[in-house]
Image (tube, rainbow, N blue to C red; front, side):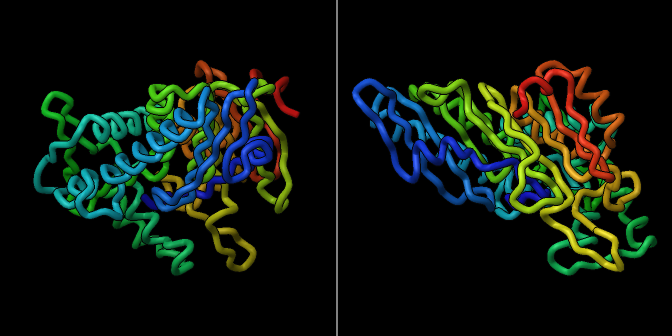
Length: 336
């Protein structure tokens, strides 16, 4: 799955020091193992804390298998995936899908409702028209207007009883690249716990889900990147049984005549959203963090922070277009 977002959270510095590319352990301490593979079009790193080497290796393998399994269901780059079949049948007929695809699309529509359509899994045709990293083109107003009916997320039809998804307009398509990695991280953590892992980190590019603790530490330290200063962090936070995700205008963009054109589009205007430089969301679920960061980026700092303050177990750092940093009330005391 190719993620159409500029996401970077941070390096798990302490994890990297502890684990390197293999493992360390002693008689007194749990085993800490880290492995990396390519899945969902990105580098996926899994770190596990386990009572034995055998459990550590088994839990990591289970995590990678789950991510690979979900990629086969969700990736629009795989013609046989369930979402590819839904897209191919747009305007013709509903498509029966499995419980994971149904759940993920349902959760995506929930994120769309929360963010007033700021998060939109149907916006793909407009993203392709811009082709920010491939062709660096600015589509005409007429071209974007012709796509408007194809990017209406409210037209996505889900029948929970029949377990079908239907896109009523030919040319419509669903792309869960803006939420799928967070969902996959959640599911990977679930299977790792079942295999006996005591703690760990699943990181799909900038979508990170943690559980438990590192030995001798409280949670897992994660740094949050500055959107305009290469290599700089704006803060570090310790995560415990939490997920973190960032949407920013600095990973996929081009500039023309001093104007930055990036890939995070406002579904209302089909133009790049202009109110934020980056949005980092911390939540109990990777699905929520991953979906909300883009939605809040589009909503803007005022509406976005108001939403965060209303939601349980959700915190955020929002950097507006002028570089001003806003931190949610429950997060201020945790940053360092």
